Image (cartoon, rainbow, N blue to C red; front, side, top):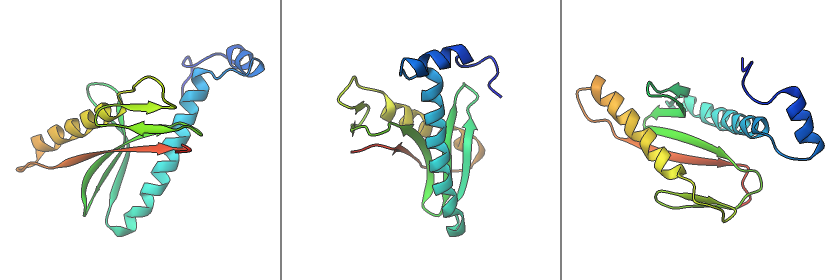
Length: 139
């Protein structure tokens, strides 16, 4: 599925021996976080909710999860940061007090994108709310 993408076996082995995280480790941790959130969201189906996973955008990238149901429409952006301390503001987030990351702005952009798509196919404006879900954080 990801042949030709990610580090080679030798690069992964080198990273393991030097105890350095590789891009592959980061990607895989993110995927596991998305799967975990997806399983939790699927539990809402018995309450009238519909969940779509990894919704591709025509302008590139994807939306981790799209949740549609009695409470409205939500885009879910999943971030995995094991044992980290996370602070979230209106447009940025900080992980372990580090540099600001545009997680909130990206989530707002995803909601805006879905709002635009739904607006083209519905006869009314559909409110779409962004949600950030952090997996594995300590605080």
